[in-house]
Every structure is written in structure tokens, then in C-alpha cells.
Length: 364
Ligand SMILES: O=C(O)C(=O)C[C@]1(C(=O)O)C=C[C@@H](O)C=C1
Image (cartoon, rainbow, N blue to C red; front, side, top):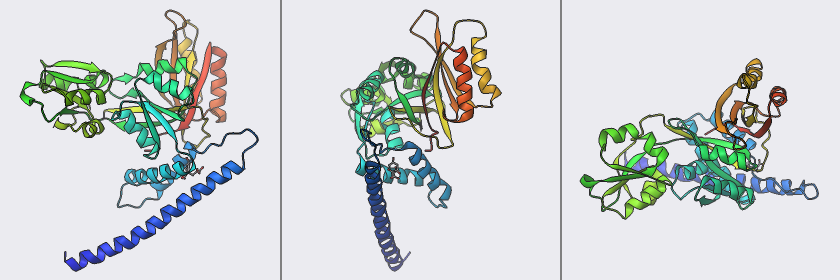
């Protein structure tokens, strides 16, 4: 390519950037107008709701449907995710608590869902995320709920039994683990490997094959594991890209998770009800009396009404020995007439039924 050609193309890019800049600014001014309208239409004592997950899902889907490339749909939606995040921050900067410390996959999930224009607050434990949201110190919380290799995150399920929370969104993240070392690590003398228990489990076979005799030490998070390695010469950590970058560690081995499709699902929790989008999920907790056929009775209405169950999990109820609660996710919104009637049928048989929330299915 000649210098001349390159120069002409760069001039074209400059001119396009000016248009993109103007359009983004116009969009941001429009969002400010939206905020003004929302404020003006408030009833006496009503609190304005700036963050609208149902609208965000609609915007991102529309972008993906209309995208003609060459950028892929996910890439394009990611860019719009950030534009919308910045527009929302002009209306109201969202405060989001997540399972920290900085550099965890939960932080990456929070950024994937809300974009980078939020004020994010790392918490030391899942229960603290719930408490922070309940206390009103933040608008939303982000917690892991299930992993495709290791199953349910029980701390999260149990926290739902203790706090009144509304689920207002979900996000899925591909989890890639790396074996990380610091500048001073003697790589041929590694005698301990730190990570979160879930991550150690997700890399069990790889560790058995490559480091069978090295001590595996479970710590509170992958980011904490990365932090420890920085100051030790004989240890390594299993963690992801964010933690590696944050603590300046290098990858001794990449993508060491046993299953290549290893993914974690995260939930956004808050107090805001989300209206239907037409492509939603609902999460409920149900407790049934301890008698034969109870689980069958619980599931029949879903089957008879053709409602797609996406997940069912059992946990001890904490209100009696050998009594259980079921966490159920299914397709649909609790305001859909069909879902409403199924929930009514179940509540007639159940000891207790609680709708944790209906929310748009993950777009990104
Ligand atoms: O449509 C709205 O209600 C807006 O506030 C605008 C907007 C956007 O930028 O498109 C911003 C934040 C909301 O979460 C949803 C959408």
C-alpha cells in the first residue's frame, strides 16, 4: 500500500470519527432529555427510575439484528453497551456492589452487564453484596449463581433465603483460567498453587496431570490468589485475565480449565421490578410439604402449560431438619397470563412461593 493511499484512508477515518462523535453526543443529549421527561412525569413522592434493563435489552438486540458487519454482533453490541452505560451515567451514575476484590470474574460480569460507566464497589463476600443492596448503599449487586462445570453457588442461593431481593438481570461469562506467576517466581520450584475452591475444581484434571504433588490452597477469590503470588517466589495462582493484568502476573499456562465451555452465570440483584420484554426468564423459590409426590406436583403445571424450565436446584430450607426449598428458573415473565396461572396452581400446593424476579434473558 502506498503512503498516498494510507493517508487518504486515514483522512476518511478522521471524517467518519467526527460524524460518530457528533452522533454519540446527540445520543447523549437525547438521554439527558429522557431523564428530564422521567423527572417531569413523576407522581408525588415517586422516585425516578433511570436504569431500564428491559429497554437496554431491546436496544442491544436491535443493534445485533441490524448489524451487517464486518464487526461481529457481540462486538457491536459491546460497543453500544458502553455508549448506553455512559448515557445512563449522565442521567444517574449507578452504584454497583460485586463480589470482590478487584479483578474477580464477578467484576468482569458486572462490567459486561452494566458497562464501565458505573461506580463499582468490591465486597468481601456474597452475603455482603446482598447486605449492601438491602441497605440501599448501592443500586445493584452482582453475584455468581452457577458454573457449568461445578454447579450451583450455594452461598448465593442461601442468601436469597435471608434477604428480600429482586433479580433484575443475568449475564453469562466464559471462564478461562491461567496459571499465573510473578516476576520473582522460580517456575521450576513451585510448591503451592492458590485459587478459589471453585477454580481449583474447574482445573482439577489439568492440575493432576501437570502439578500432581503441588499443594493446592483455596483462598477467598482468584484475585486474592493473584495478590498473594506477587510477594512469593515459590507459588503460582490460577486466575483470569483481569486479575493477571491487575497484579502484573504472567501466564505460565493458558486456558487450563478442564472443560473448554466452562462458563459462569451471574445475577444482578436490586429492588427494581423489570417489565416484560417478550424474551424473559423468571426465578422463583418454592417450598413444598415433605410428602410423596410433592416434587411431581410442583413440576406438572410447567409441563402441562409448555413452560420451559431452565434450571432446578434444591437447598436445605433452614427452617426445619430435612426440609428443602427448590430454586426454579423458567422462560417467561411473571406477568404473562400463562405464567401467572402456573404460579397460581403451584401456590395452591406449595407451603410457600416467592417470585425472585423476572428479567430479560442475557443478550451479551
Ligand atoms: O430509554 C431510557 O429510559 C433511557 O434512559 C435511555 C437509555 C439509553 O441510553 O438508551 C439509558 C439508560 C437506560 O437504562 C435505558 C436506555
